[in-house]
Image 1 (cartoon, rainbow, N blue to C red):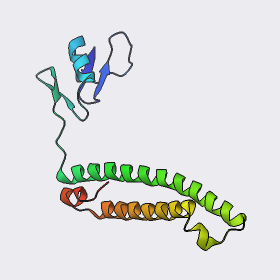
Image 2: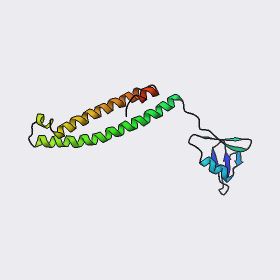
Image 3: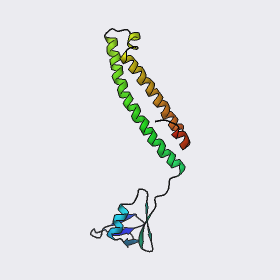
Image 4: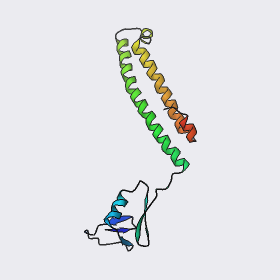
Length: 147
């Protein structure tokens, strides 16, 4: 097995290549397996003809914040999606009651109406949190947003 730092690729010995990079080094099976098992973001380098696996670069505070915001956003979007399904069911029940001739004022005070109002309120609260997440400038601000 061979490795090229220039291309960042491994070249098995049993495959013929018409254009091989000029910086190839021999790599043992153990080195190849270690390279495949390296942590995400870890780098491959060649020094003195040997393959070296470098540490993954640490993330900046901004990158950590972006990652945390993505995770919190995904969690909130999932919650909103589940509530929207419940909202759809509650809306159907309220519409069925209206079509059955019941007064809207009465419907809003029974179980179906109360559920629809609660779900609408919950969705509104989650959307406000979603807006807060997008505005968060620090990890502390983000952590203060309950999800």
